[in-house]
Amino acid sequence: MAAIITSRFRLDTTDKFLASLASNTFYMALGRPNAWTDDTVPTTPYENDYTNNTLWENMFAMKKIASTDIIHCAPRNLWVSGTTYIEYDDQDTNIEGKVYHVISDNNNVYLCLKAGAGTSTTNPDVSPGGVQTTGVINFSATDGYIWKYMYTIPTSDVTKFLTASFIPSRVIASAPAGGSDAALINQWSVQSNAVDGAIYNMKITTAGTGYTSAPTLAIVGDGASATATATVSGGAITGITMTNVGTGYTHATVTVTGGAGSNGAVRPVIGPPGGFGKNPNNDLRSHYVTINTTFTGDESATIPDSNDFRQLALLKDPTRESDDAVASANTYNVCKKLVVATGVTFTPDQIVEGHTSGTVGAKGQVVEYDATNGIVWYNQNEATGYGTFLATHFLRADGTSIAGQDITAVTAPLINHHSGEVMFVENRTATTRAAGQVETVRLVIAF
Image (tube, rainbow, N blue to C red; front, side, top):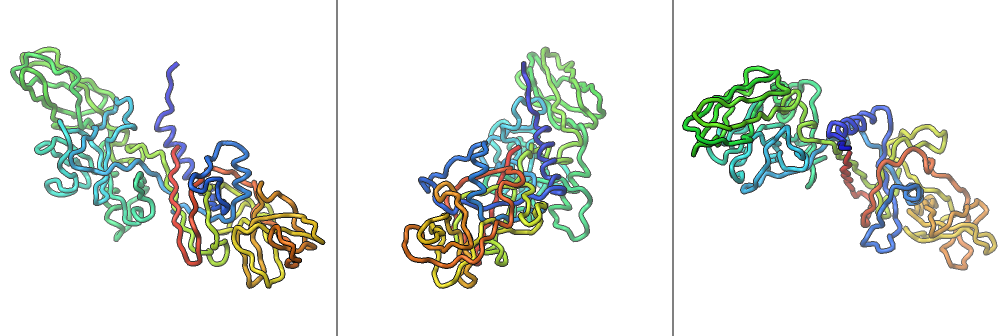
């Protein structure tokens, strides 16, 4: 049995994920202040409950993802002179695995409608007449490539979502207001002028023999008005030029007659529903999303900023400890909390223990210490054990024999650990946080 999961299925799943932000709450989480076994080689996360459980044990902060923090994206292929690109073909068995669209240095995105005989040497941005924001750019006089301008990435999206490997893409729902970024206005023009079911190219499947003049090409299908002419050389059909791309085709056949030759065969390449540029997410197979979240220092004294992190996670609908309702604040400190008498400094990553008369009741790892208010934010994991700190304990560094500081309060995390759903986990090498420092986290997730 032969079967496929289509790009449309992946796109539909991607669309639903983005749409779910309206009815669900997603957070980007930071964690794992403690080192990996080999801190230059992060441990591989696996799809199992152990990964989820240890994620919560090591998590210390999370920030809400806004709808403006996430976008569709597609693989980034920078146009480079001297490169051979693949032309779009509606019958290609692996179009998604080929480089058929590019981005220029000016962040203009193009789709290759027809490839030349060799490499591409003329930048789509410098075509005669400049960038054509509603039509086709034809380089047949130079390198033979025909490019379709799709859109320009808006400046705000370049800053927020463009990465070395992926480009952002979106569908504009309505006409941009006056004074909007020219990129949005141009894309709206492309979307509005897209031609449904057009035939921009034809493939020569059999060149034929004996042609002394150009044969006639008769296009028959469920659309209208498409016309084309053939070029012959050495008795064979060597090229096809579309003289009218037509509209409304979902299927068509081409009959080759005349020219005194025989056996020439041509098939049309039919554009997608709605036309090229109507839905760039579909045209570029943008079944990926880029998420951009920025953590700025301690986010107004709400999260730790004096420790490093080695783990990122995407959480859906975690709940608050106070009332079990879905979390709603912009940021949360996810650590457990001890309030102690001031006078002793506790340092990030230090292992501390709570004891009574020398009997140790619990151990934890310090994530951050607020010396002014005597607050120890800590995590517990397999290395520390999961003992319970009590307000009757004294807190001291692990392995010491001093009396330690009086614990006056033990507070549960603001967020219920193991609540909601873990949607994504990434383990990485350490990133150091610091007061006033900004960390921009970009994640790309494939569907």
